[in-house]
Image (cartoon, rainbow, N blue to C red):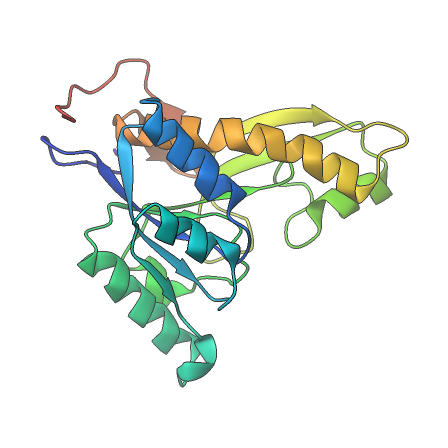
Amino acid sequence: MSVVHTPSGRKMRLAVLASGRGSNFEAICRSVDEGRLQAEVVVVISDQKEAPVLSKAGIRGIKNLYINPADYESRDACDVAMAHICQEAGADLIVLAGYMRLLGKSFLRHFRWRTVNIHPALLPAFPGLRAQRQAVEYGVRFSGCTVHFVDEGMDTGPIILQAVVPVHFDDTEDTLTERILREEHRLYPQALQLIATGRVEVVGRKVRIRKQLETADTR
Protein backbone atom coordinates (compact mmCIF):
# COMPACT_ATOMS: atom_id res chain seq x y z
CA MET A 1 0.00 0.00 0.00
CA SER A 2 1.10 3.58 -0.54
CA VAL A 3 1.75 5.19 2.79
CA VAL A 4 0.90 8.80 1.97
CA HIS A 5 -1.24 10.03 -0.88
CA THR A 6 -0.76 13.76 -1.28
CA PRO A 7 -3.80 15.27 -3.03
CA SER A 8 -2.94 16.51 -6.50
CA GLY A 9 -2.44 20.22 -6.86
CA ARG A 10 -0.43 20.82 -3.69
CA LYS A 11 2.71 19.84 -1.84
CA MET A 12 2.86 17.37 1.03
CA ARG A 13 2.19 19.11 4.35
CA LEU A 14 4.51 18.30 7.24
CA ALA A 15 4.03 18.69 10.97
CA VAL A 16 7.40 18.66 12.74
CA LEU A 17 7.73 17.54 16.37
CA ALA A 18 11.04 18.47 18.01
CA SER A 19 12.47 18.90 21.50
CA GLY A 20 15.75 20.70 20.84
CA ARG A 21 17.69 22.93 18.49
CA GLY A 22 16.02 21.71 15.31
CA SER A 23 18.98 21.00 13.04
CA ASN A 24 17.00 18.37 11.11
CA PHE A 25 14.11 20.84 10.86
CA GLU A 26 16.53 23.31 9.28
CA ALA A 27 17.83 20.65 6.87
CA ILE A 28 14.27 19.88 5.80
CA CYS A 29 13.51 23.57 5.26
CA ARG A 30 16.68 24.03 3.19
CA SER A 31 15.66 21.11 1.00
CA VAL A 32 12.25 22.70 0.49
CA ASP A 33 13.83 26.08 -0.33
CA GLU A 34 16.19 24.47 -2.85
CA GLY A 35 13.42 22.49 -4.55
CA ARG A 36 14.74 19.08 -3.52
CA LEU A 37 11.72 18.33 -1.32
CA GLN A 38 8.18 18.81 -2.60
CA ALA A 39 6.67 19.65 0.77
CA GLU A 40 5.90 22.46 3.19
CA VAL A 41 6.10 22.60 6.98
CA VAL A 42 2.72 23.74 8.32
CA VAL A 43 3.31 23.51 12.08
CA VAL A 44 6.15 22.87 14.55
CA ILE A 45 5.36 21.48 18.01
CA SER A 46 7.76 21.12 20.93
CA ASP A 47 7.45 19.73 24.45
CA GLN A 48 10.20 22.13 25.59
CA LYS A 49 9.23 25.79 26.11
CA GLU A 50 12.69 27.17 25.31
CA ALA A 51 13.50 24.81 22.43
CA PRO A 52 15.42 26.75 19.74
CA VAL A 53 13.39 25.00 17.04
CA LEU A 54 10.37 27.12 17.99
CA SER A 55 12.14 30.42 17.34
CA LYS A 56 13.63 29.03 14.12
CA ALA A 57 10.13 28.15 12.94
CA GLY A 58 8.89 31.61 13.95
CA ILE A 59 11.59 33.32 11.90
CA ARG A 60 10.34 31.38 8.88
CA GLY A 61 6.74 32.36 9.60
CA ILE A 62 5.73 28.80 10.45
CA LYS A 63 3.10 28.22 13.11
CA ASN A 64 4.87 26.94 16.24
CA LEU A 65 3.49 25.72 19.55
CA TYR A 66 4.80 24.66 22.94
CA ILE A 67 2.74 21.80 24.33
CA ASN A 68 3.41 21.13 28.02
CA PRO A 69 2.65 17.47 28.77
CA ALA A 70 2.12 18.41 32.43
CA ASP A 71 -0.97 20.38 31.42
CA TYR A 72 -2.77 17.15 30.53
CA GLU A 73 -4.18 14.50 32.82
CA SER A 74 -2.47 11.67 30.93
CA ARG A 75 -0.07 10.93 28.10
CA ASP A 76 -3.03 9.79 26.01
CA ALA A 77 -4.78 13.13 26.52
CA CYS A 78 -1.65 15.00 25.44
CA ASP A 79 -1.25 12.75 22.40
CA VAL A 80 -4.86 13.33 21.36
CA ALA A 81 -4.44 17.10 21.68
CA MET A 82 -1.30 17.06 19.51
CA ALA A 83 -2.98 14.85 16.92
CA HIS A 84 -5.88 17.30 16.68
CA ILE A 85 -3.47 20.23 16.23
CA CYS A 86 -1.73 18.38 13.39
CA GLN A 87 -5.04 17.53 11.77
CA GLU A 88 -6.27 21.11 12.02
CA ALA A 89 -3.06 22.25 10.33
CA GLY A 90 -3.80 19.86 7.48
CA ALA A 91 -0.68 17.73 8.00
CA ASP A 92 -0.22 14.75 5.70
CA LEU A 93 2.88 13.46 7.49
CA ILE A 94 4.25 13.78 11.03
CA VAL A 95 8.03 14.24 11.13
CA LEU A 96 9.86 13.61 14.41
CA ALA A 97 13.08 15.63 14.49
CA GLY A 98 14.73 15.07 17.83
CA TYR A 99 11.41 14.65 19.64
CA MET A 100 12.22 13.00 22.95
CA ARG A 101 8.83 11.60 23.94
CA LEU A 102 7.26 8.34 22.81
CA LEU A 103 4.02 8.68 20.87
CA GLY A 104 1.34 6.21 21.90
CA LYS A 105 -1.64 4.58 20.23
CA SER A 106 -3.82 7.62 20.90
CA PHE A 107 -1.66 9.64 18.51
CA LEU A 108 -0.68 6.97 16.02
CA ARG A 109 -4.24 5.85 15.32
CA HIS A 110 -4.74 9.25 13.68
CA PHE A 111 -1.47 9.01 11.68
CA ARG A 112 -0.88 5.29 11.14
CA TRP A 113 2.08 4.87 8.74
CA ARG A 114 2.10 8.65 8.44
CA THR A 115 4.60 9.31 11.23
CA VAL A 116 8.35 9.08 10.61
CA ASN A 117 11.47 9.43 12.74
CA ILE A 118 15.24 9.53 12.28
CA HIS A 119 17.44 7.63 14.72
CA PRO A 120 21.25 8.05 15.05
CA ALA A 121 22.14 4.36 14.66
CA LEU A 122 21.66 1.49 12.25
CA LEU A 123 18.49 0.00 13.66
CA PRO A 124 17.73 -2.48 15.08
CA ALA A 125 21.11 -1.89 16.75
CA PHE A 126 21.25 0.64 19.60
CA PRO A 127 17.64 1.82 19.93
CA GLY A 128 16.61 4.41 22.50
CA LEU A 129 18.64 7.21 24.04
CA ARG A 130 22.37 7.93 23.57
CA ALA A 131 22.68 5.64 20.58
CA GLN A 132 26.02 7.17 19.62
CA ARG A 133 27.45 6.49 23.07
CA GLN A 134 26.17 2.92 22.87
CA ALA A 135 27.95 2.43 19.54
CA VAL A 136 31.26 3.85 20.80
CA GLU A 137 31.18 1.83 24.01
CA TYR A 138 30.28 -1.38 22.19
CA GLY A 139 33.18 -0.97 19.79
CA VAL A 140 31.32 -1.36 16.50
CA ARG A 141 33.18 -0.50 13.30
CA PHE A 142 30.17 1.14 11.67
CA SER A 143 27.11 3.00 12.83
CA GLY A 144 24.92 5.52 11.02
CA CYS A 145 21.33 6.71 10.93
CA THR A 146 17.93 5.25 10.11
CA VAL A 147 14.73 6.83 8.85
CA HIS A 148 11.79 4.68 9.88
CA PHE A 149 8.05 4.71 10.36
CA VAL A 150 6.91 5.09 13.94
CA ASP A 151 4.91 2.37 15.65
CA GLU A 152 4.11 1.81 19.33
CA GLY A 153 7.57 0.42 20.13
CA MET A 154 10.91 2.09 20.83
CA ASP A 155 12.49 2.62 17.39
CA THR A 156 10.89 -0.57 16.07
CA GLY A 157 8.94 0.62 13.02
CA PRO A 158 9.61 -0.38 9.39
CA ILE A 159 12.88 1.02 8.02
CA ILE A 160 12.72 3.41 5.06
CA LEU A 161 16.38 4.40 4.49
CA GLN A 162 19.71 3.98 6.25
CA ALA A 163 23.13 5.58 5.89
CA VAL A 164 26.39 4.03 7.13
CA VAL A 165 29.02 6.01 9.05
CA PRO A 166 32.42 4.58 10.10
CA VAL A 167 33.28 4.53 13.79
CA HIS A 168 36.93 5.41 14.42
CA PHE A 169 39.01 3.95 17.23
CA ASP A 170 39.43 7.34 18.91
CA ASP A 171 35.82 8.48 18.43
CA THR A 172 33.93 9.98 21.34
CA GLU A 173 30.19 10.25 21.61
CA ASP A 174 30.46 13.86 20.42
CA THR A 175 32.66 13.23 17.38
CA LEU A 176 30.50 10.32 16.22
CA THR A 177 27.35 12.37 16.81
CA GLU A 178 28.69 15.13 14.57
CA ARG A 179 29.57 12.72 11.77
CA ILE A 180 26.20 10.97 11.94
CA LEU A 181 24.33 14.28 12.03
CA ARG A 182 25.76 15.27 8.66
CA GLU A 183 24.27 12.11 7.19
CA GLU A 184 20.95 12.74 8.96
CA HIS A 185 20.66 16.12 7.26
CA ARG A 186 21.14 14.45 3.87
CA LEU A 187 19.07 11.31 4.45
CA TYR A 188 15.93 12.70 6.10
CA PRO A 189 14.90 15.05 3.26
CA GLN A 190 15.67 12.27 0.78
CA ALA A 191 13.30 9.89 2.59
CA LEU A 192 10.59 12.55 2.84
CA GLN A 193 10.84 13.22 -0.90
CA LEU A 194 10.34 9.52 -1.61
CA ILE A 195 7.16 9.61 0.48
CA ALA A 196 6.00 12.90 -1.08
CA THR A 197 6.27 11.42 -4.57
CA GLY A 198 4.33 8.26 -3.70
CA ARG A 199 7.28 5.89 -3.94
CA VAL A 200 7.09 4.33 -0.46
CA GLU A 201 5.03 1.26 0.42
CA VAL A 202 4.88 -0.83 3.59
CA VAL A 203 4.68 -4.56 2.92
CA GLY A 204 4.49 -6.51 6.17
CA ARG A 205 7.25 -4.93 8.20
CA LYS A 206 9.37 -4.16 5.14
CA VAL A 207 9.40 -0.96 3.11
CA ARG A 208 9.46 -1.11 -0.67
CA ILE A 209 10.80 1.88 -2.61
CA ARG A 210 9.10 2.11 -6.00
CA LYS A 211 11.34 2.87 -8.98
CA GLN A 212 8.57 4.61 -10.90
CA LEU A 213 7.42 7.97 -9.61
CA GLU A 214 3.71 8.50 -9.23
CA THR A 215 2.74 11.53 -11.28
CA ALA A 216 1.49 14.41 -9.19
CA ASP A 217 1.03 18.11 -9.82
CA THR A 218 2.79 19.81 -6.92
CA ARG A 219 2.73 23.32 -8.29
